[in-house]
Image (cartoon, rainbow, N blue to C red; front, top):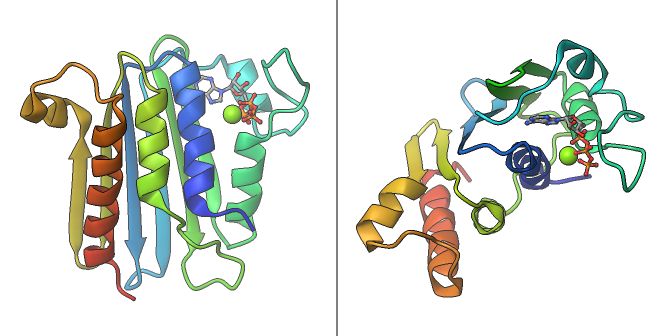
Length: 181
Ligand SMILES: Nc1ncnc2c1ncn2[C@@H]1O[C@H](COP(=O)(O)OP(=O)(O)OP(=O)(O)O)[C@@H](O)[C@H]1O
Ligand SMILES: [Mg+2]
């Protein structure tokens, strides 16, 4: 079973590859609503209607190194096994939003995984792109905005080992405070 954070990494990498300058990742983890919901929004190249129709088919990819793109079909499968769904909204030249959800208490629902690691990896892969990451539970919301962190640290890039490790710990500490367990 693939952790949800690993799926998020896959989908965010698509946004980075699509040349996004703004990436928004929003997680809602609600025991009350028995729902884990993920929204990943970018302002990258977007997809044509034709591509959009094909992307949840595992035999479609615009990759040239191998034939099968698996990121979106795997996430779709994971959601549908948990009475959830995956929806994609995309427009060429405008951007893409991937929205998906899982039934939280479903026996097949994968654990969240390590979001600190995942966000650190995403930030390290971004160039000229800002990230707004929101993580909400029944207890409250945590928001991380790379533009704000850059202003706070007075630096133009966060691609520095120490800064990345600090961000990872900062995220994991905040999420564990918001978690229900
Ligand atoms: N955010 C996005 N913006 C623009 N195009 C996208 C986006 N996400 C997916 N696509 C298109 O959909 C295709 C399929 O994506 P998917 O993640 O399923 O596979 P992949 O990225 O090609 O390969 P893999 O994820 O297995 O490395 C991509 O090749 C790309 O053409
Ligand atoms: Mg992909």
